[in-house]
Length: 588
Image (cartoon, rainbow, N blue to C red; front, side, top):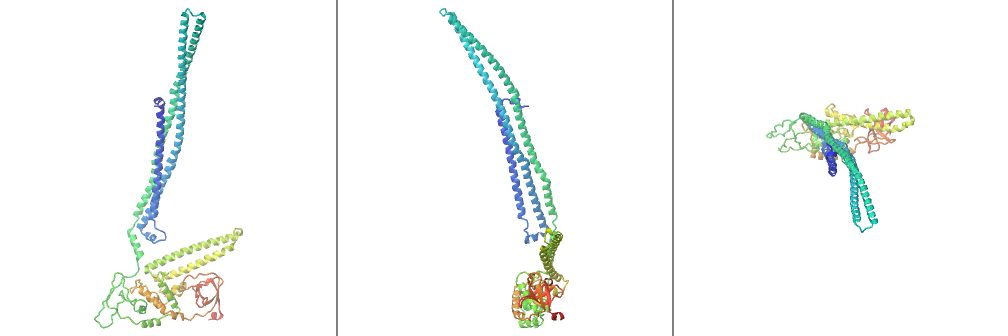
């Protein structure tokens, strides 16, 4: 089966067919290109979808994704992101292995087809030229034969005429012989041209055209094979990513299997557990007795016990009823006079400097959320404090690692001075040391609060009070009850707007007495070795080289109390100052 023998006379149709084959190939290239665009678009939409539903960082939504069902959803989003990546791989492989290769092959195919049909046209032109030469030789031979016949007839006519001279007859005879010779020459030329044409025609139809058509046939068959290979590659590209897509789907299924409803329920308990005990029974109140009715200690509307009656002026005159309990609509009991409660409070007050801490506690109460999370229920407060301690420990570890790195670099500079000046790192070491000291103080402060919440320490000591100004408000039990009473009668958490208003009133009423406090005497002076930013309540900021007065030396907790002027005093780390005590103070 050969186009050269079977289709020797279908040159034009073969030209159309091969052009159609190239058009089909270009159409397939366009199809694959559009498929890659669809894959890219699909992958982009999947990635955008996955990104859209990812939890935002440092947001409340991110905290909610601690549940196993939400974690499974996050895993699903991540797997979908990988799934989208496989579609991008499909697009890339189809582009590189099919589109690019076929586009280059089409260009080569067009050039080859053009060359073959150029040779075919050239062969056709050659055979047409031979045919024209044959036709010309044939017409010349025919013309010469006719002229020779006419010359012979003219000679015979002249020879038969008696009136014609002998010279005319001889002339006619010579002319006839000349024409006969020309006819013989034309005949010989025609015969030679005919043989040549027959030879060229045989070569054309049995050698040149079959060879050209055979090359065109091979070219077209290669095109067909190539488009088949491309279709196979098209399928293989998809098949190659099926295992990875299967793993993505397996990951989604595994994430779904990891959902634990019991664990989620436990997380809900940990998230919202207050740590309070349910309220006790409400005792019967007998209104038939003329005596003044009392309220049980287990009642939800009572104060926090007989030991806290003085707290009523601070916002507990109106009972706080707890979850799901309606208020008692019985007639209100007669309130005690405010002056009587005031006298009770004043008789049990601690040292006068504690009222300053009380004022700070009141400002904290009336402002934003407290630093010690005391506005939270005990269990939630414990979790928050523990989380804060862990974060501070991580920051301390980072600072220590940085200090070690700087120390090693300094050692390298000492051994190799050409690499750098060791003294240039002293400032950084001091700065890192100050940061570590600050963070350690913060850790001690939060650990003290955490210890109190967990019940390991009954009350916070003076050392913890010095670590935080807010902590000073809790050194005296009665002052603490006045400044910050966040528990219900049965030990649960409560806050009321009325309580805040009365706290404001209390802070205003005691301002005069706070201001009349006598300042502590000066026991010496000190010089600031480093700059300290007193960001916590009860501390004071100092600048390097500053001279200040010492009013209370270090009690072993690492803090020294200093004064800048009559209105500015507070605690600073003892390691940040150089203390010069007076001789009398040393003797005492």
